[in-house]
Image 1 (cartoon, rainbow, N blue to C red):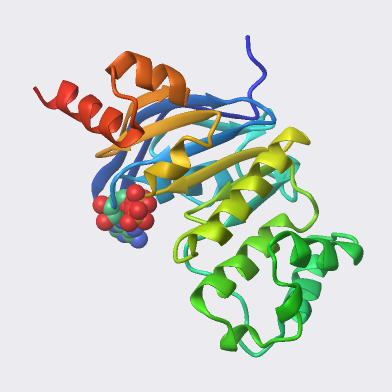
Image 2: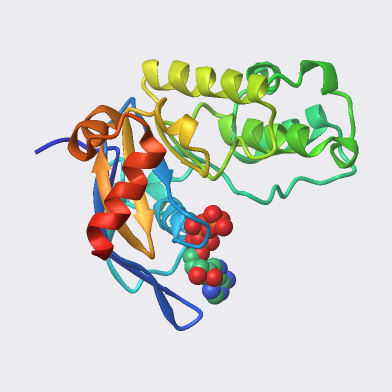
Length: 238
Ligand SMILES: Nc1ncnc2c1ncn2[C@@H]1O[C@H](COP(=O)(O)OP(=O)(O)OP(=O)(O)O)[C@@H](O)[C@H]1O
């Protein structure tokens, strides 16, 4: 059996009295980038919260690096960037990162490394509260990179970024994966899908597909991944 970094088995999650993840199963191979795509509200963030271990689940099992998600054995080995950055606005970028580096017991040298990786070197001394939306989300991503976690769970890390920055961040994700990190990255943007090793296409709390971009194109006969996704939706609704 494949030694998955993240394994989700028949996961069911309820939120607000409604089942928002309905029997999802998949595995994420080590050293790969897996894209989690689907329309707003389909359950992407809920699924990611389950992988990080901060979501109460109704049924099923989520294991990360061979341990139940959120347990002590995996704490510090998983980096998580949420959609809503929660970094103190009255600290500078470097101060905030030093603070979080202390919490996750990352080496002090990590602060400068992650600032460079997200392209915030020129803003290291700027107050978090004064950053633009895109700079703020990069600072948030930098926090997740502290301590060089083996698994990175990134909820829409490129939202609000211009195409050049998005491209740079995807290059970083690819580089991290090549060095052995496992990444689960959600996105609304289909052109980012092509840069993933594997795609999870989600709709209404269920997985429509879990496959490589190439196999999804072949299976649907569509060269464009957005059209391939639409075709899969047609298949299940007709
Ligand atoms: N705190 C909550 N209480 C009740 N229901 C919630 C809560 N958070 C999310 N939901 C519901 O759970 C469902 C899945 O939400 P989720 O945030 O996982 O979707 P998503 O695919 O990440 O959406 P988006 O792309 O807009 O972030 C939605 O129907 C949402 O309304």
